[in-house]
Length: 508
Image (cartoon, rainbow, N blue to C red; front, side):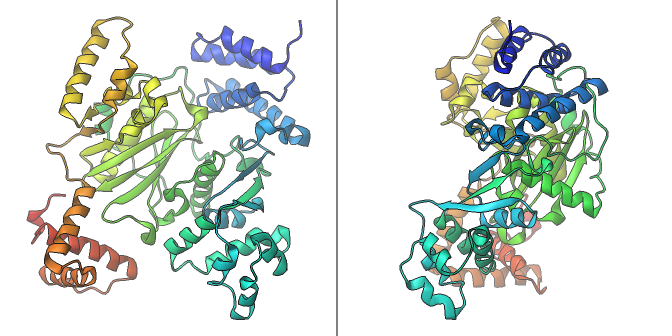
């Protein structure tokens, strides 16, 4: 009997579901490498399986076989009748297309990186380009922006050819770079959709890798992690990167977002000078990076990360750091789920704990189930619990302790969905210190109250007074740039509100 690729994939997948990792890989590759490909959902599953294999190869033979299969899939998609199939729209696979919206800065970066892109359309409820261009166009051309034309008609009246329209918009909005948040708001209100192709192999999800070290070969998936020992294992020094390596690392990080219809502030507004890469055990590397000064958040530092497994971007997220405490978010790309998730998280925590001297890490309840049924169904609460995270709510923490006792004592016991939903009503934290830190929202509330009480809500006067007092107490009279002045204002308001007179008054 002959099978289509999709039927063959399902048969092989079902037959080898309980095999060990290495046996499953051999079985899948042997049975599918000679099978004719078709345009089915299983094609994408097989592609993701190959990426997983390439990130967790048993040996050189398996690595070579998976690379060969990936090239076969790429050749299949090179045929327009396949790559244009609706199944592959927005998939990020080679030669396929994507239509979406991204920020102005990311669009500008993509154009500068030679992506094949065009303006596709404007969302119906978006702002009128007529109104926005009044702020950027030369005065002699502003009359055109008062003619009541639609966005498309206005671009045509201005003589902008379709192939140049996206570049034109990006150039016009670039004139607002000195007012980044105004620029962002106007770009978002315009709601432009762009279409682009993954016309170069490295632009696609299949070949987007940062290969700067030897491949790690492994025979098993490591499920058990001694997190306490790992957290105390000293980090190596950051890798030495050439200018070329650094530029390529930045490109791989940005592309990993684009290919998966994602965008994060830390990747789009990355401060390249802050980029560090730690090369760790079992083929794991972690890049951490901050944002440019004008994009940083008040008081806290938003530090993003991309975790690589044998060169493939496997996870991304960030941490919001305030003193020795931080909030932390973990996201594993779909192609790499089911692997060494525990090790991935523990290596990330190790990196942040040591790089920023943290003793308290908090995780938002959404990550494990609040308004997130996927987190409930997966029992994600217990994933974090295993590595030392506990509920901030005392009653819920007691409930978790009772549930864990049942899990350990009753074979096959599973926590009820209702209980997991209840546990997801509180954030959880890993406390490596002795006290719970103050919260940023409490700081904002207290500062607002201080300004209202002492300055009758006059924020300009409050900032001027607090900065003057801070400089006097600290004997601080250094000339600062604009970004440094903003930080000084934040710190001065904080110091006056909390009555901090010297370093002994604050252990934040």
